[in-house]
Image (cartoon, rainbow, N blue to C red):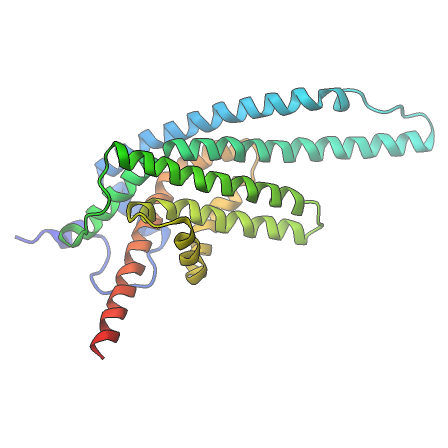
Length: 269
């Protein structure tokens, strides 16, 4: 008896996109995926929170001398300097927390990468069933490769963070650019899991996002918005990361299947 139709929550015919709510339903219907997701969420939260506290303490220690001594507010010029100092203090406070989060998140992302690669593989295997194509084995060598790929994206994330920090000082346009940068960077972060299982290079992953820019925006926009919320971003990102890993894997799998079918049809013509 074929039980495939009872397990798969999506139609057999090719579809362009699986919405997030369908991916959530797929995740909730699998106790195995839920269990893996729960453990990975705790791991990502713990690593990110610990790294965040460390980064904040270092930054605050280096800048305490300046921000703990406000300028003298005597006279009009003194009040202007005090106002500018307060604006700078709170702007730096906000930006330093965002930067601290991303530094901690990049470290946590790199270290937890093998677990999310495993979640991605389990997701695709459950979805594809007998059509699942085996990829790179989950062994010690594969784990080291996954960590290395995570570190590559982590280093790229440092560059993105520096660019975002610089662009943030440009009124209005800068904030839009920051959201754009983080949208595509987080889309790359989620794409890393199913693509690394296929041993794709970083350049090939970036090219895939460039060729599927609409999918990249669908994947990355909500996590990018959440990541810009100070303090709460640590908890929320840890909570949604397994879901978006599942969401990205399902849609990546479908897009790759469609591309393969299209290439086959072209060859037959």
